[in-house]
Length: 88
Image (tube, rainbow, N blue to C red; front, side, top):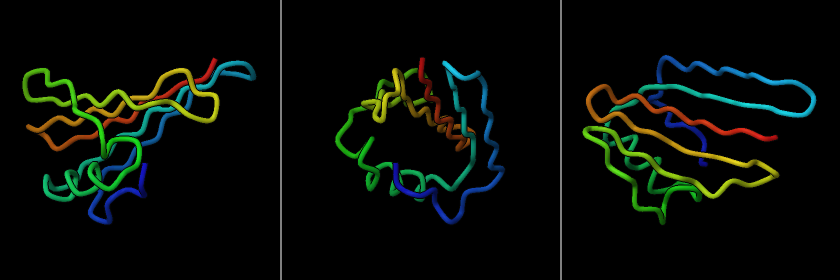
């Protein structure tokens, strides 16, 4: 993913796991136009069509660097982005 938008607020990073597994969840908010620009310029999401679930868009990102799962969820009601990835 590209660096977060400069307008990102409420950044929260959560890390879980131990020596053999690791999980990261990143949350932030940003204005809708900035989120769309960020998604369109990010190598992980720029060529993906999201799965739409109500007012949320889920981008199933191709995991890299040994990750087993990576996804980006955008809530279009609250402009909240959740990035979730894990290794095992």
